Image 1 (tube, rainbow, N blue to C red):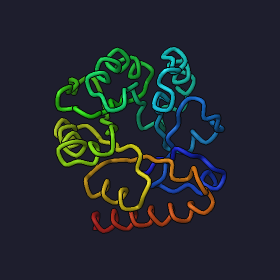
Image 2: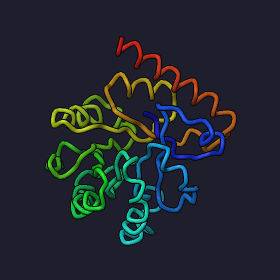
Image 3: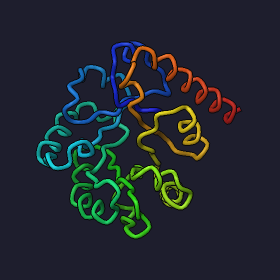
Image 4: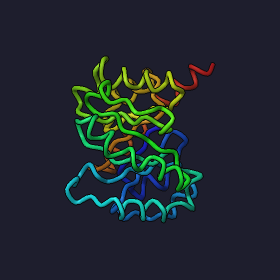
Length: 208
């Protein structure tokens, strides 16, 4: 499943099973889509880490609880490129996410092999980190294999091309997200649909 971090009227008017939403605090989108769409909740710390407030984020998550049956996961706060700092930041919030009724996603960052969380403390592994690590065989891909060995679904962030999306599918990731529709949303909508057609056809071939 591809989770779009940008919601447009065209996208919302054309749902399809391979497409979901990646939502985060401050996006200001109409929440009426949530009863009908699969989505995930990011924490919003990536763009402005110095301004991020844990209380505001948890209040936002609590406000979306009535839609949690359609939520794939909620992402614990992380520190880009730093696995040890991410482990220290995330651990106090993983159980809180679960108590709110969501599956808790832990973000793997650069150096994840030095800061493995206890697999029992989270439900989904979100592969973050810098591109040179996250798309490396001994980086993000190895981390995803570790998660799958513990029965955890895996998600890849910042996937903004057909090639990467297909690679994620072939590599057995359960979902990916990106902001491909941010620039030229109308023009890029048709391209995104083509990517999803490729994913759909490959999925059908695997099932057959």
